[in-house]
Length: 99
Ligand SMILES: [Zn+2]
Image (tube, rainbow, N blue to C red; front, side, top):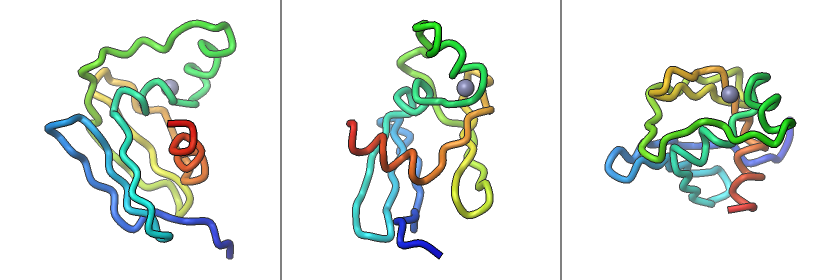
């Protein structure tokens, strides 16, 4: 058991292409779908980042699917066909701090 905050509710805001997360500690985060796509840490995307290349991502990209991974993360599928990215809660909180 840990005291790390976890999402209570995850909502897709289709109009603004954002993902809204209500956390157990009361914080509400909003992430642009495109920002999450660029923050993907799957092997392929990490290799691009390591080579200082940009992750290809249209501004109007949308999240198509969200699949829970255990109790610590979610896997996000985007409409460019990319669905390899796993986003742990701790990573999302880190992105929240950088935003
Ligand atoms: Zn990726």
